[in-house]
Amino acid sequence: MPQTNLPSLTIVSPCYNEEPMLPTSAPVLQNILERLMLSHQVADDSKILFVDDGSQDQTWTLICELQHHNPIFTGLQFSRNYGQEAALMAGMQTAYRHADLIITIDADLQDDPALIPAMVTQAKRGNDIVYGVRNDRSTDSWFKRTTANGFYWTMRRLGVNLVPNHSDFRLLTKRVVTALMQCHEDKPFLRGIIPQLGFPATKLYYKRQPRQAGVSKYPLRQMIRFALDGILSFSIAPIRAVLYAGMTICGGAFLMLIWIMVQHFRGAVITGWSSIMASLWFLGGFQLIAISIIGEYVGRTFTEVKHRPRYIIQTDTYSATFQSRTTALNVHQHTMS
Ligand code: UDP
Ligand code: MG
Image (cartoon, rainbow, N blue to C red):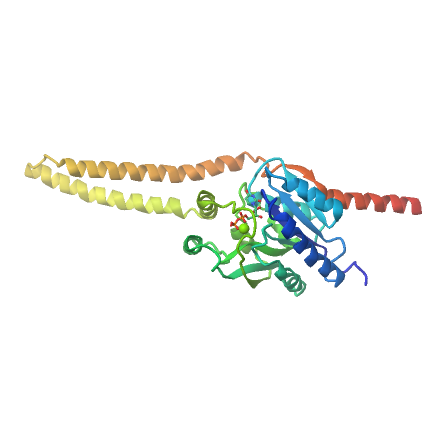
């Protein structure tokens, strides 16, 4: 069967301190990809690309060992920890130069990798985006479920079109990733940006499993930061809310002024300590919140205009694989001529 018409698939998986998980998840992904290659669903140069997001454990050593035993595995190593979104962006940015289809999946395989062949089928049917969507969050804690629902509700109210219960398990075709790479944001909120790109899309449902080894890298503090990134990078609604609140308070202050003048002319000018204190504290607090919200946007503009790199890649064994092949091919062609 000629390979030329088969799409080349790269599975991108971000890894941060995944030493306990990789020995389990790597063979699972390998198995799935090899079956796809054997059944001529994807091209023989399809790869698994682990992005080591500055792990402090032996993750990178493991990735190198995997590649040593089987060139289906490749890796990117960051110079330090840049975060999951940066790892996903780096993986996609490196992969889309060679791959036609890119699937991103967490290294702990909490999202069902058995869905990967169905995703490829959907892509062949003309879908440029295939979202993996959880239809059952029973394995998540009550707290995680409730906060996640609250987050989707807030984002919907702010007019941001998110796919509920979809995390970063998705397939994208080359043209979607090409469009995505035109978004030069410092902190790209992928779950919000990708639905905004358009393109034919579909959803596939699965049950999310509990993490089998290692620990979650999203404690409460990280979750709050992630939610704030989502809201602040997509909406100026908080600034507008401050404006409306400010206008309401000014209205209240105007009524207050009338009342003060009435009191003044009536000769009852000794105002109470409690009302002064209440307005002092309330307005002081409100002003601090308002300034900090505006400051948050100014801060983001500040980081954005600096145009610092989103991540720094220390080692790239993925591109090297393709380069060595191209070089070998060139040498071959050279000797043939
Ligand atoms: N991850 C990463 N960089 C980070 C934090 C997490 O690359 O700074 C990766 C992590 O290795 C995993 C994925 O992102 O593959 C999701 O993280 P995790 O499983 O800890 O999140 P949870 O499933 O608990 O939300
Ligand atoms: Mg996880």
